[in-house]
Image (cartoon, rainbow, N blue to C red; front, side):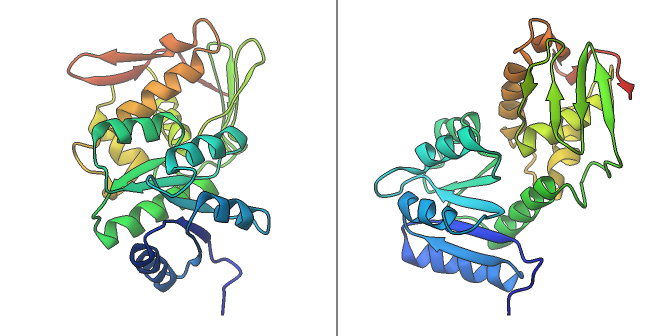
Length: 241
């Protein structure tokens, strides 16, 4: 019987064997799985109910996974994990650039898949955060106002800026440790937890994406400075409001 608290996961995968394997794996972890063979089937599912997370294969018949991911990100903040047999760094970077929250190459370790799904669910639900509880946090820096609980970021010229779950976690790490050099390893550990691989380049891609979003204001891009050989630093003083 389905638990009322069971997260609903869409698995968009055209390979029957992999779709059934992933579905069975997540079901055993207490999640409610909605298998979809194509992007069109996923669209039909979304017309019937909401889902908490989507696992998307890149090589789908019809509309491919990257196109689906781009379209979903344009209309909302659904957490998305891309999986693909194409482990090329280019595909990985493109997937993250267009809005995916994570990327896992095939073949993958089943335990790693579960760990990454759980991490994305924690971020999206705002509970059991790996970077500490929010507790009504609201920050001001360089004219920006960021409401952590509402995930509302507003620029000095009153432009709302939408963040994905990964970008939200990174900004939280930086804003709560302002004017301090943070290494890639620290950011990986605080924002992604134990499932992060030591050479994971996701953090660099998401930082680049966050910088571009902050650049909606002329001085926004300069808020995060790269320290050569050291990591990153959030340069503005931060005030809790």
